[in-house]
Image 1 (tube, rainbow, N blue to C red):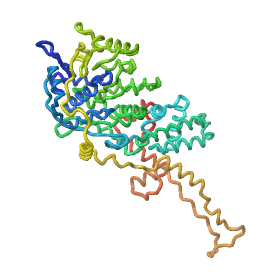
Image 2 (image 1 turned 90 degrees about the horizontal axis):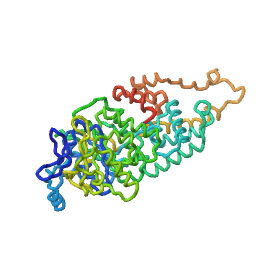
Image 3 (image 1 turned 60 degrees about the vertical axis):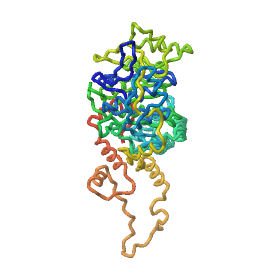
Image 4 (image 1 turned 135 degrees about the vertical axis):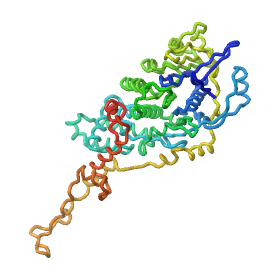
Length: 524
């Protein structure tokens, strides 16, 4: 097991004659973020599992995406197989005390874990434009669609809401031109095609309610160990933009929900961002700037972010500069870009007089790494060539029966499984269309000119129109138990929206003032 001591989590060591070099990750420096790099098959997954175990033992919840489908073994007790025993003997390492760790399973598609959802409004136009691969003009039109929906009090909760809203804006583009600017049919069409592609990839299952409560990621078990949250990402990787957008949205949720805590003894949550190159590939400059901002500021919320990728060049310099804890597995120098990556990795790690870092990077074996972690004063330690300790839990995936048991016994079992489809933009726009198409009351049975008085001697009066109901009327019904109508009015929708926002963290609206135009639209 990744042992803990007053110095931190022991994640790697190596025997040098009679002395032992050990690498400890200090819990009070774990929220200074980190970087785990290395070529495919060099041991990054084992490093992830060992680190997750160490944090869990300290009582720190963990989130990580299971890209290859083999991290779920952390939920089961490991065993000393013949292969592992041989490796431990060769490296002079002791066998771990095998144990299972508390685990929650999640899945955007709801097949291998609890469903994970977000509303369209919560995701916002910038991240959605990134997901849909829109150009600058198309992204601007999408922002107008969100703005018009907000101004009209229309809730954008799921994919059909957004598609209906885009069609409504496209059909009535001329009436919005004066107030909002030009809205081209070509841009609306591009957005609709992008939404169709996301639906074909199954991404529409990500949008809707009940939306994920980020607090459900921050749980501990009865023994005080942090719960390891594992997102099934093997199928999600078929839609890489959806994968990257989802993880970035989750990171922004952590930033917006958690209060400022400053420097603390250990993180409140550790977030592993696997396949990090997908986050930055072809990302517009404004998005990279926002990612840099959130990574820098989320540290003060007690969250440690660890980027995992094959090549350190995948991470922009502005973000790379904030990653103080480094674990570098082997890199191959087969191409000029590979050679540049080796040099870059070596230059960004603290030099060790007794170690040629650049040469060592190309010589490392599986499970071997160059490690430089922050010391008690926040300075990078000397880079050491060490062996990552094996995990105490099972290496490899779990069975279908074990997965079912985990889901049934989860603390959130039954909370997210059933979707909720309340009245929103789709229903409101559909109602408007039906109202326009319906014949006017009394038109078909209009009395002829000069009609006679009714039996009571008075002309037949037209039915009086129902009095218009305002926002305060809707509030009275909601709070005072008034008559509930089949379709909520715009005023009631606004009240519901406001009521759902009251339970947010204190100061959330201030944060939304900073990030509202960056990571999301109005909260609904």
